[in-house]
Image 1 (cartoon, rainbow, N blue to C red):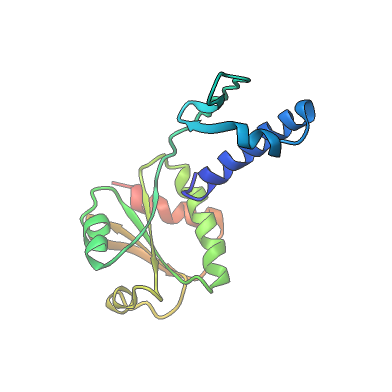
Image 2 (tube, rainbow, N blue to C red):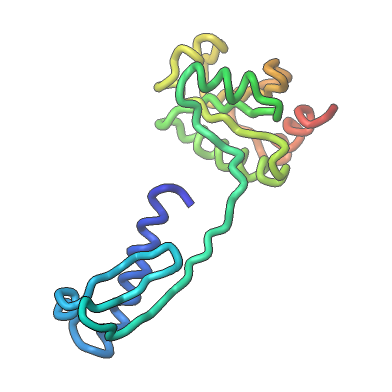
Length: 175
């Protein structure tokens, strides 16, 4: 879950819980002044300052996802996480305004997810990091590099189908 989805999910759970109380007890506005809402790590608990009126606990389980995609922050970050990486890295030079970049990015994430952490994707926004784009002679987007131990193994420019992306990744994984 991204950083914005978690609070939104908590608000949605809270809204659903409050609406279920509203159908039993009438408008919730009256009870908001009487009760305090405590959001805990194990769930949502309603309590009164004087004595408990109603306690409902809901546990939210969050799975740990495999983080294979990251955004490059600056040139030093690129050197550390891409050039210095022991894991092979796909470097995606893209732009926010580029439609084919968005399509390719989604396809690449899907194909790389099948590799179960054997490959990482580094996303480099050319508008934010023009120095890296110039250094690697990126003249069009999307441009994708396959890097292993700091060396470029293969590259392509433009959009590719999933089967073409899988063939591209096999070159990177092969010993």
